[in-house]
Amino acid sequence: MKEKLYIIKIGGALIDNEELVDQFLEQFSGIQEKKILVHGGGKLATTLADKLGVEQKMVNGRRITDKDTLDIVAMVYAGGINKNIVAKLQQKKCKAIGFSGADANLIKAKKRKHAEIDFGFVGDITEKSVNKKLISKMLKWELVPVFSAITHDKKGHLFNTNADTIASVIAQALSIKYDVELLYCFDKEGVLEDVNNSQSVIKNISEKEFLALKVEGKLHKGILPKLENALGAVKNKVNKVFLIKETELINHIENHHAGTEISL
Amino acid sequence: MKEKLYIIKIGGALIDNEELVDQFLEQFSGIQEKKILVHGGGKLATTLADKLGVEQKMVNGRRITDKDTLDIVAMVYAGGINKNIVAKLQQKKCKAIGFSGADANLIKAKKRKHAEIDFGFVGDITEKSVNKKLISKMLKWELVPVFSAITHDKKGHLFNTNADTIASVIAQALSIKYDVELLYCFDKEGVLEDVNNSQSVIKNISEKEFLALKVEGKLHKGILPKLENALGAVKNKVNKVFLIKETELINHIENHHAGTEISL
Image (cartoon, rainbow over all chains, first blue to last red; front, side, top):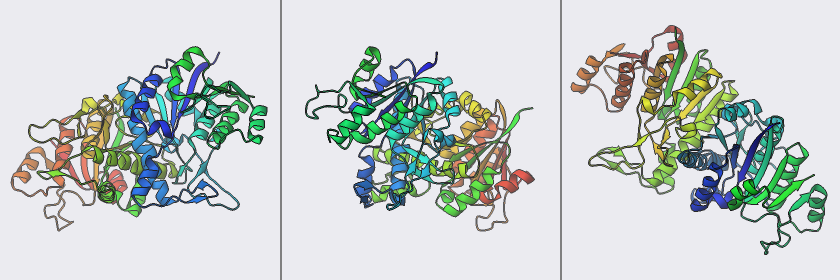
């Protein structure tokens, strides 16, 4: 039987709230099984860009990572946020070790190519991008990897990569060796039928149901890429994938089902 | 016989010059023996502080690291500079892995205590601060640790720590296991008798000679803490310590003596 491994992703809304971060990290530290944390960026990068007068360019509603923006996200994600999370986990006796994808070539990306739009320094990844051998070694040593959403191309360039996707591909890559449960933690109770009713959690979403919900326009924009990454994981051998509320982490792990489960 | 290990420290003047960094990293990558890189911060942190209107406070000529300044140096050192160096080394087929002292509790510091001055978030360290077991494991795996000048206290706080001191204490801690050569790389040919004459390199400085030069006022301010850290290393079992010009790294390693050697 494979050993259990939790891969847990936290996002911006949490990271921007120091008290919530601390509560979450307390719960995360309490997980007895092997675990990996992946974090996004929060508003800090946008705030810093504003202060520095670095304009955030959007094309068709999607952010462009120019050189100045890349410099900012590398500093904020891999430096400020990552090292503060690691220091706080160390305080809680969790043997955290912070990484970008450049470190030890842990996640090697390809610059995004698009027929019409130049997204700039954005890296695309698949499960093959992940140095699973080295991550497994770290886990074997009882270390707890903490990944920021920065990757590289092994040609000297750093990239901005979606943190949901990083969590998904790490989960896929490590599923060969571990019994992986991928948890997307966010500020909702799960995927909601009615976004204004926290009681309306959809307990299970299959691929078919996801496509139906998408066609019906029932999924608000923010949750779409998360669900796509979640589905990508279950389609590629990740044993369990959930979307849960950040404050429900330990409850989910102990009672085995909070939030929305994504399945085939 | 112990295995050879180079611990190499680079500073601000180099880091601020992209072309020089690239040349240096090319030479660094060429070292066949085990190696560790320690880097300082350069002017980037000061420039960012200026842009953000974070005043840099000095007391008796020494910098105070308040919370805003700490946030900036954590971002710049452990994020921007560290990850860019790691990505460039990866390009050069050097298996770099970037760290702050918080990662895996690699360097645990104590907040500096001073009778009169509150230096803020400044961490003091000794050889006992270093997690030498884990660093040795990384080296055994052929990884190349790259340390930024950020430490932590295992109580959830990051600290700003002098990079010369970090290089010195890592060298001291690893000398039990390795034949360590500590190289302080900077923009001079070595310690100069006459600072305006690059030919006036002092080949060797013993502790006695250092104290005499200090009393005579022959050492300019910038080099004093570097020499003190260098002497701290030789006094604590580090086999060889040199101050060399950055561009002389490979020449030094192949010809065994560029710059100034510090000895007991």
